[in-house]
Image (cartoon, rainbow, N blue to C red; front, side, top):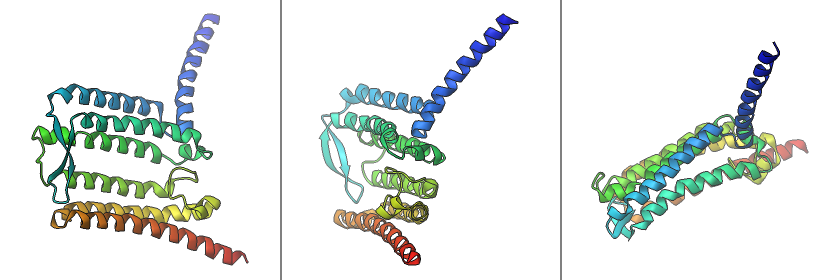
Length: 252
C-alpha cells in the first residue's frame, strides 16, 4: 500500500509538474509551450537551411519587385539568410512582449487569438523569406507572381486578425489601442469590434491591390497602400473618439 501510494504520489507530482510548466507558459503569453517549441525548431531549421544553400546562390540575388511584378532590386546573397533570420527574431519578441505588458493577463484570456497570430505570422514570414532563392532557382517566375503572393498573404493575415480582434481583451500591446479605448473597457470592446471590420476591409483591399498592381506604376501602388492603411487607421481612431465623446455627453 505504501509503495503503491508513494508511486502514485510521485507520478502525480510528475504529471502536475509537467502541467504546471505548460500552464505557466500559457498563462504568461497565451501560447502553449508546445507551440513555442515547434515554432522555435521551425525557425532554427529555416535559418540553418538558408545558410546551407547560401554558397550555391549567385553573388547578387533579387531583393525587390516593382508594381508590375518584375525584379527591380538586387542585393548580396547574404541578404537571403538575413531575411531567413527575421521569423526567429520576431518570435523572440512575441515571447517577451506579453511578459512585460502591464496587462499581460489579457493575452491568456483573449482566447486563441494571440497564439493563432503568432503561428500565422511566423509561417508567412518563413515563406516570404524564401522568395529570393525560389526566384533564383526558377521555381517561381521572376515576374508577376511575387507581388500577388505577398499581398495575398498579408491581406489574408489582416482578414484573420479582423475576425479575431473583437475577442482581444484590454491590454497595452495588442489590438486597436486608442487613448479612449485604453481608458474605458466598454470603449475598448466597441473599438475592437469596429476595428475588426476595418482590418477585414484593409485585408481584402490588399489582396485586390496585389492583383491590379501590374496595371499601375510603383508610386500609384504605394499611394494605394498608404490610403488603405491610413484610412483604416483614421477610421478606427475616429470611431473610438466618437464613442468616448458620446459617453461623456451622456454622463453630464
